[in-house]
Image (cartoon, rainbow, N blue to C red; front, side, top):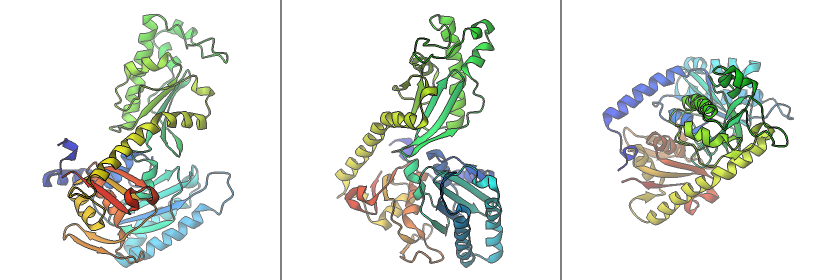
Amino acid sequence: MHPESMPLSAHQRHERERKNRIEDDAVANAPHRLDFATIQSFAARPPALTVSILLPTHRPGSERTPDHIRAKKLLHAAELRLMALSDAKRAQAMLAPVAAAMLEHAFWHHPQDGLAIFCRDNGFTQIWTPMTLPEQATVSDCCNLKPLMPACQGDGQFYVLTITRHGVQLYSGSHFGLEAIELPGATSIAEAISQTDGEHHSNMRSESSNGAARHFGTVVDDKSKERIVSYFRLIDTCVRAQLHTERAPLVVAGLDYLLPLYAEANQHPGLLDTGITGNPEQLPEKELHERTWAIVAPLFEKASAQARERYAQQRDGARSSWDLATVLRAAHHGRIETLFLAAEVNRWGVYDAVSDTFREDPTEGAADNGDLLNKALIYALSTHAHVEVVAKAQMPDQRDIAANFRF
């Protein structure tokens, strides 16, 4: 059995919860980038009273009712549910920082198509999303992550690194679009080489419009190649510092002779052999996204097809189920290999893992009710299961939930 497939021991669970409590404290009142690593870190947080506020938003310049009015209404709904579970003093202390932040212009300065806010006693976090989110305010012991999954799960998350004379740019991507990511420490290739060879810098030039100048400088000699590979090692270090252990595909875009040199310097495990050749400065972001998606989409489709084939082969056996209670219990014990969830469906109720008590209740507004499909997702992500949140029409047998078990 693969090490990541092994269920966690009591000691491992304790150490993971201790570590995540520290991380939980460290992210109070901070914005987060939407990627799979962020979702996993939120799923790994220890259970605690959590307010999740999700809403669709509008990009700058569009005709809209102010998004902060909608957010204020959801905040009020969350406060009422929170008071039913706790008390007014605690509810006010938890939500007051969010209400104050929403009044600041900077809070809405870079809106996208959706906003998720997660509040706990120690602060709140916000995530802007490139996809529209349902309008929801929930209170449970975990973050409401299921609506965010389609933008960053295994069938959509990738990265693009563009290389030009003026520098590099890293993007996080999904089938919804691209989002620029800051890359601290990354300089331009011209600056990096000029620091070691001023004379070489005088020869640096970008690709001309007719393609005649195919390089930034004289790259036919070994010394020039060594300089560029050395620069790319610096960039690779910056990329890995940002992406940490993320293994999502990485596509590099740049002049054709630069791509093999970057591959020589690269240590990131997600780098693909296929890149995008040409000068990225002449490539609109929409076209960059389309060309990158054409490269990565077949990889995601293959992984999804394999997972679905395994489910089809096991659907009538003991190592698969579409029963919610059965899947929840299996997820809690780390038995989930692959989990499929219907994106537009909520199954409200309560599952207490300590007492192994399961109760489904269609009443969304009940004070202690949470989305049980989201609870299964939290458990599955915490044990590195393969998860797909898709439209119900694309679900195996069009179920609300389906899973393969590791054992």
